[in-house]
Image 1 (tube, rainbow, N blue to C red):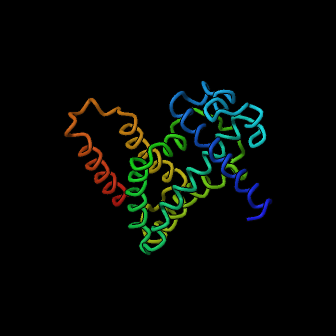
Image 2 (cartoon, one colour; image 1 turned 45 degrees about the vertical axis):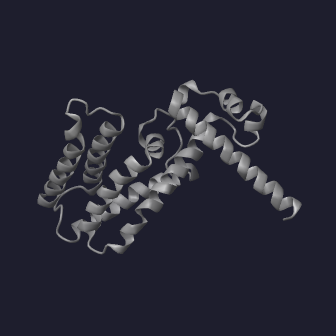
Image 3 (tube, rainbow, N blue to C red; image 1 turned 120 degrees about the vertical axis):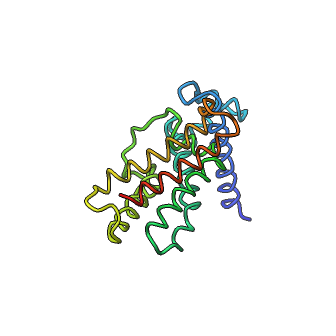
Length: 203
């Protein structure tokens, strides 16, 4: 390995170290209560080192947000093998829940954590997130071509589907289901999803 390649490798490793430390701090303390100095202290470098890689805390968040959505989109990759659009939509919901509970740290930074959202949706920072949302809207439109959801606005219906799935997942993820007995909680989610599938099939 040459000097140039080694320097690039070291740079990528440092960038990843910064992102990992920032992610953990954001999860533990919340975005607003984390400073560049906190991140620097966590990796035992000076704040000046952080600024060599990111211009501010917002840019760090955008990088983490993009990486989380990239993993999400990769996780959804199996959908491409499902030809029937309604079955694909249902599988999308199943995978959404699976991703949430398998990778809660990513879901949290994607949809729950209070953080800056002042980046234009068409910019590189939000490219992966936009791709995920377009995938949902596209499959809903495709379902309409197969006689589902007649006379329904696809954008509104896509939002309804997303917000319903997000509601179930975030309530479970943030431990807000204690109104139910412990043994009932997972069953409640399963039964609710089955009911939601039936509602969608009847639209």
